Amino acid sequence: MRASFASTKDPSSEIAALHLVRQLRGADGGEPAAVILFASPQYDHERILGSLCSNFPSTVIVGSSSAGEFAQGNVAEGVVALGLRGEDVEFRAGVGTGLKADVAQAARQIASKFKRSMEGRRAFSSALVLTDALAGHASGLIDELTLATGGQYAFFGGGAGDNAQFSKTTVFCGRDVLSDAAVALEILSDKPIGIGAVHGWEPASRAMRVTDTRGMSIVSMDGFPAQDAFERHAAETNQQLDVREPIPFFLHNVIGIQSSAGHLLRVPLAVEQDGSIVCASEVPTGSIVQIMRSTNSSAVEAAKGAARSAMAALGNNHAEAGLFFDCVATRLRLGDDFGKELAAVADALPSIPFTGCNTHGQIVRAEGQFEGFHNCTAVVCLFPA
Figure 1 (cartoon, rainbow, N blue to C red):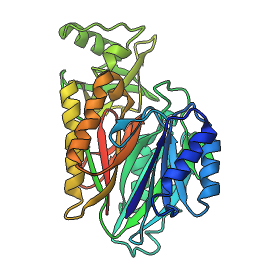
Figure 2: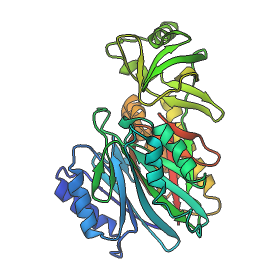
Figure 3: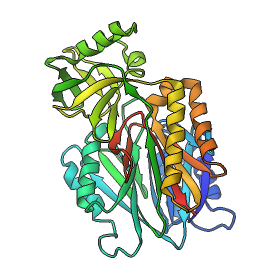
Figure 4: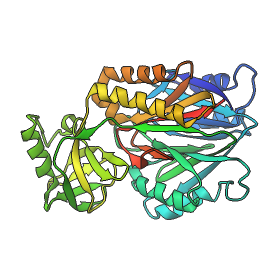
């Protein structure tokens, strides 16, 4: 597999598109078989996608709006893209719409475009999945995709972002910019895709049962308003929780759902008048949860660990290029120290270029890794040479 990278900070969508086209052609001027695009919400996404489609008419193009972009181990803050091609790999795109109404149907729409079940001539099957996280049902989407594909695929990716405004997020497929939808890039390859995921958080409270939920809100835990658990934890740990402006507290005190694969993280976002806690994704009723803690250094180590896990998953194959995803909440919590996390990934991937973005949630379902939809989790994907 061969890769080309593109990034630009030019504020003009038209000029940004020209930069992307020039860089994605690579040294030999060839057309990539697939392009993965992440773009800050201030751009005219339809204009950029239209230019890419016009210049690369045979290329499969997918992507999403994002919440902070990076390229070659550095913060990019604009538009970034990865082009892939090779005789040992095939790409196809599938779109599922109407996530809010019927997530199972959306998953079946995506899977219907995949080729693996029809031929199975490539040894390894995986898919980059990008979803409108604000539509909800991201965890259910991965479950339904696993069912719809017979468990044949490894999944990785994340939720589209909008710079933590939580107002509107979109996914891309060809020229289309879609909300309440998910897009997947099917990758059928002769060599494995290396996927690694680590979150670096540990329990900081006693275990509690979620006794009632409403959409993406936790209504009660252990029969009491969810707000009570956070206020009690703040008092016990000498932290300040302002229920009118809770984000500074929530960034350091996320929810961990106990599972056989470890804790699945969910970021709290707001406190409602009835004491419910709004989260970035659903928390199942009946689940056992704990309030989690982390440090800047553990976040950096988690990113390094994810990179090393991805390298190990490649086996004896060399990496040509990588994608890196981490949560927008992690970036907000780390501030300037987020650069240390990018540097840690670069150190763990010597001479392997990578790009990626901050997402509103991360997707991982692969052998030996956490399963499903996560928050505050570092995810690394490596493409073999």
